[in-house]
Length: 85
Image (cartoon, rainbow, N blue to C red; front, side):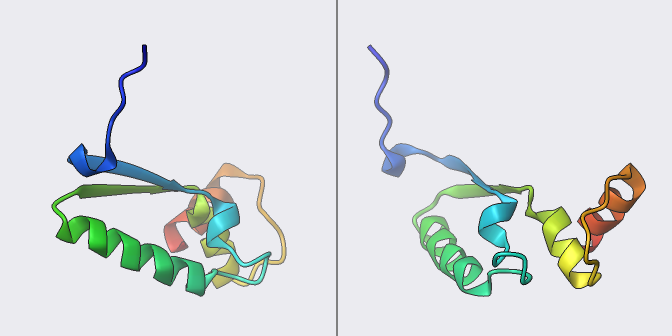
């Protein structure tokens, strides 16, 4: 039988936020969604939880900030976009 874990009992949580959630249908970052996650994460932190955020959205955010109209395929360009994002 699988072990049941209550969120309230977890000390550390890893939250994965994918690029499709971080971006606003190709129009840059989805700031309203990000603001909601921040509020939720602050609440969890105030309750004593350690939060680790993992996102594949760094490349998408970088592409938006660099105002590129394409998703690069070459590793150096992907790395550049991720570092900006």
